[in-house]
Length: 247
Image (cartoon, rainbow, N blue to C red; front, side, top):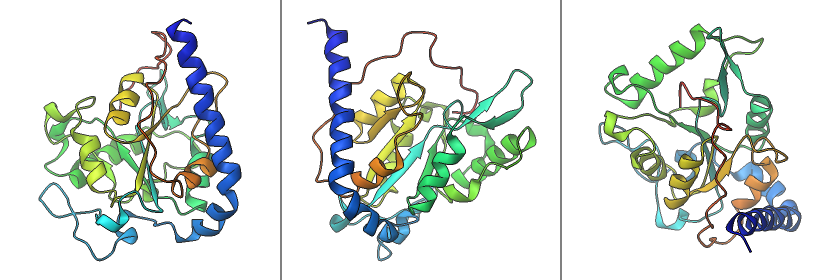
């Protein structure tokens, strides 16, 4: 059997297993969704936090590792937002609805995105500049909902930390408080890198697949036992991934 065919079958099996998990756990997950943390700090309020200066914004405890919580991280450019030829910026199709669905389930979300390290000395400073840049050219009836992401916006402190280097995913993992982590992006190299670091990855923009990982499946992931390492995902043909400006 050709490797491509094997990978397609593996991908379909993973989707089928996910659907089984949703159907099996939907009743439990729906009832427990209200208890999912809005932020990593909510998950484990008795632990310390971490930022660029050494203080934790997330939390981490042994009891929370692999526990009943999940955090969803995203790339930004061409994953959640699109930059048009006229430089205007807007939501990608389905992005706003997906974020609303996660918000309704109290699932915390974050960004792992490349910006110039010169934009600030801390994640907070770089995030403030990122917000200014996005908002300045935003086009749409609804602004980008930065409030959903709180302080979970991870950006490179140095140019060496830019993705696909592992540093940003490692810092986001440290802030996740032991919750299961999902990473959604449109580029295959980032999907592979996040998988290698323990994330459950989802490649957005695939033909005949949901635009984003279904929110019910994400909720169910919080209640599954620790999963084995996921197999490599099929790579996109060159030219299928849109150019990224912020992300």
